[in-house]
Length: 108
Image 1: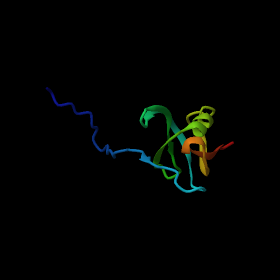
Image 2: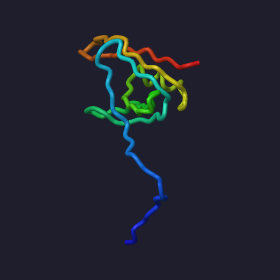
Image 3: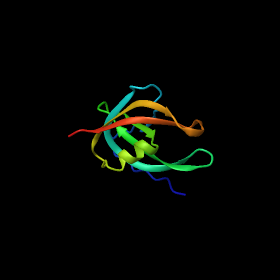
Image 4: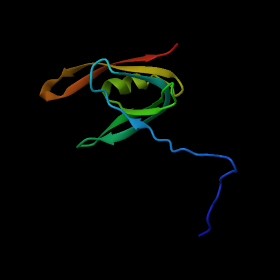
């Protein structure tokens, strides 16, 4: 098989990967421009949840998973909008299930 070279003289590349972040402490907040909205399967049994990628003001991509509250909010947000997501609190539901509450804001 022939070797393919598409590099142009003087062009440099760096690897780009989104850091996966979680919300562990109430008050934690991440903000940036929404780069991507997609879905992924998690858990056993598997269920579909949102996966969101934002780019911070420093140019760093961050990815996080959704859930009932985040997925509902992000359904109203377009790629390219500037967002801030803040972990508000956790609620214990019937059967020992935990529900994390978030505040999702969009810059005007």
